[in-house]
Amino acid sequence: MKIGIIGTGWFAKTHAAILADLDGVQVTAFCGTSIEKAEKEARNWSNAKGYTNVDEMLEKQNLDAVYVCVPPMAHGAIEFALIDRNIPFFVEKPLGINEQPLEIAKRIEEKGLITSVGYHWRYKVTTKKALSLLEHRKAGIALGYWMGDMPMVPWWRDVNKSGGQFVEQTTHIVDLLRFLCGEITEVYAAYSSTIMQEKVEGTTVSDVGSVTMKLQNGMVATISNTCILKDSSKAGLDLFTEEGILELRNEYLREIKGKQILEHKEQVNPYISENKVFLEAIKTGNPAGILSDYKDSLKTHSVTLAANQSAISGQPIRLEL
Image 1 (cartoon, helix red, strand yellow):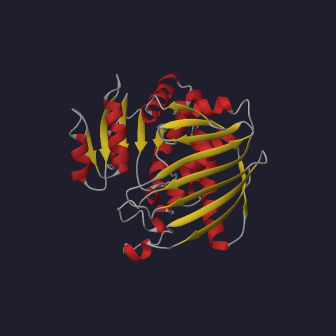
Image 2 (cartoon, helix red, strand yellow):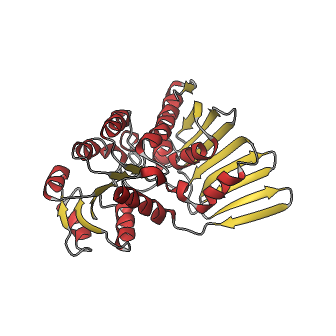
Image 3 (tube, one colour):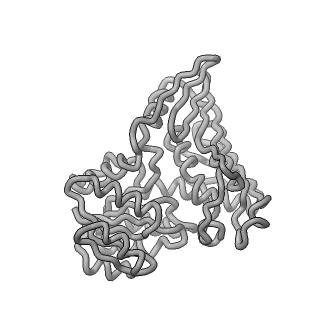
């Protein structure tokens, strides 16, 4: 399989490294914001070439699939170019910063194109275990977290380029909540700028925020985030059930019932799993194993956009299912 990668940042490098270890896969093209960046990545592959123009790359390369690993504001034209050429693609979250993904999703469905979105928490063994446990117990409320520092890239701190932390990072926890507990029907958000606007020039994103959500099944959830921390972090989802608490973190799942704690360590690299599933879907033409395609991911994207809208208006926002 011949693969193209659009982007030269951390995610592009991560996926390229995984693809390098898979049999029958060859990355033959990189597209970056500069030819120097693209060619630097291409040199890691024997027959790869660097480009700065997506259309040129797609015209000159006969690609079986493309990975889209670009900042939030760069989405749109890339996806439309791939859809026009019937090229399956894997796109890293978020899908964008506005409602353009709605049109992209329509075009994908019209073409019947195979897609996958990088919500890697869905591919964790611990997430699968949590799903199985929830078959026998009912969650009433959930608390989610994405607490950390501010990524020091200029576009991230500009709300018009990243969409803000809830769109760019906390989307993972929103998606995990949806995957485990079902659809979100209403959101009410409160954001604030407390520290980072004074510390880092050009910061327009809120640095603290909390979003309360109602779910279709009657659950209530609150997911909070901040980027003010230094040298510490907390990310995950806690589910409170009549049988106790389920704590999902990057490295483990904990079942807590009174003083009894049962811990399940994460045993797989979910980034590898999502890559293998995507490529297998292309080989077989069967996307059934993909846990997060573009159409489903659009629902998570819509929740995060609604949260931003609520934070601005001060009003709860209802979501169409």
